[in-house]
Amino acid sequence: MEKLPNDFLWGGALAAHQFEGGWDQGGKGPSVVDVMTAGAHGVARQITATIERDKFYPNHEAIDFYSKYKEDIALFAEMGLTCLRTSIAWSRIFPKGDETEPNEEGLNFYDNLFDELLKNGIEPVITLSHFEMPLHLAREYGGFRSRKVVDYFVKFAEVCFVRYQDKVKYWMTFNEINNKMDVHNPIFLWTNSGVVITEGENAKEVMYQAGHHELIASALAVAKGKAINPNFKIGAMVSHVPVYPYSSNPADVMLAEEEMRQRYFFPDVHVRGYYPNYVLKEFEREGYNIQMEPGDEEILKNGKVDYLGFSYYMSTTVKSDVHNDNLSNIVNGGLPNGVENPYIQSSDWGWSIDPTGLRYTLNRLYDRYQIPLFIVENGFGAIDTIEEDGDIHDTQRIDYLKSHIEALKKAVLYDGVDLMGYTPWGIIDIVSFTTGEMKKRYGMIYVDRDNEGNGTMKRFKKDSFDWYKTVIRTNGDQL
Ligand code: BG6
Image (cartoon, rainbow, N blue to C red):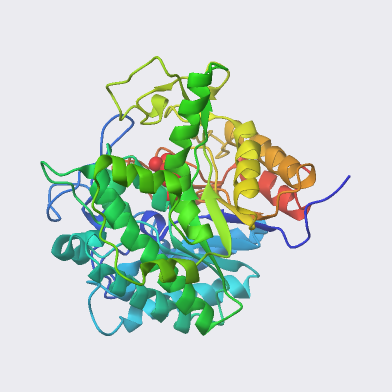
């Protein structure tokens, strides 16, 4: 039987704000997530004006990787990871975001982290911005509403590229840059772009303006990075949730096609270097006035990405004759015509489980872009139980991951998709992004911490730990 390429990267994925903790240590400034309280399934996280004493902010301590990174990396190495995807907390490097000089202590932390990874044979895969914009840039400048923030981001990117040019080869600019296309849930615009919509504003128009600035910032960063080290591989990162038609009714098929543009807009620009026709038509139709400067077209053309990283968790389905009023419902994927798919089961948090959707996604993205793809997030958020003997039998998680690896193997070995690697989300339990909970666990390593912040922070191996170790050792042969 054919095998995955020998250099296929097997890793785990994390984000600084969800696992580092140490939110005010080493000179770090507060970021946009440091003012987000904990929520739950169906209970939104609040974005508070300041840090309020009587509120709990789960990202402040997270799982304290900041002080435990050596022992955690030893566990990652024991599992056999060949890469680790994480992010650099922007506000560790530029605490407010608009300083002229970076914070040396913050830079030093990542030097130590990357050295430790490399010492253990683990290649760092680094996202520059994973929901960690300095709070000051959001409050004072309105985040990426402002063109000035483009300069601050590019400066941050340049500092990181120069400092880590011999330690990090794989980069991504913005995490899930496209999830703010869902303007109904305020946390997406806030964490992606530092933007809050005020009454009377057209949220879509503001989103496209901030998005334009981020696309420019990404393209400028790509060009700078390549000039600093031509061997860098700099990618984009998008959330990909395929939209299926509910039936063969042509109206359903066309509706799904149109909804897919929400998924494609950002990667279309990142990869092709220009705006797609359907969005330009939307601007015209809706009367959106998106400020673009002379030279922007050139910038986009000169800052195309080398590869496309994406997250895949689930799929959604649309039906032309329904109309949802509640757009924050995960079952309909925040889509006005979203419906449950009768062929697919869901997790306790309502996320559908659809491994075939991963093969479908890999094919659609590769057909469209013809550049290497990288699955940089995929996983199963679930409640785990520790047995009396200390074991954690996370069979459901293993089943989920196994079926998705089978799907990716089919895409590579049968369909011929060029796939760089696979980094399942939350290789160690971390704070959930959408809910702020700890009990929505993705890890193969359990962390003793609960939703309220109680627990010893001790780490325990789940059954999936040894299972994934075998998967990596056999390069995906033994699942
Ligand atoms: C992606 C994000 O949206 O999904 C991660 O890039 C996030 O930051 C992950 O944690 C899973 O979402 P959640 O809400 O289950 O943590």
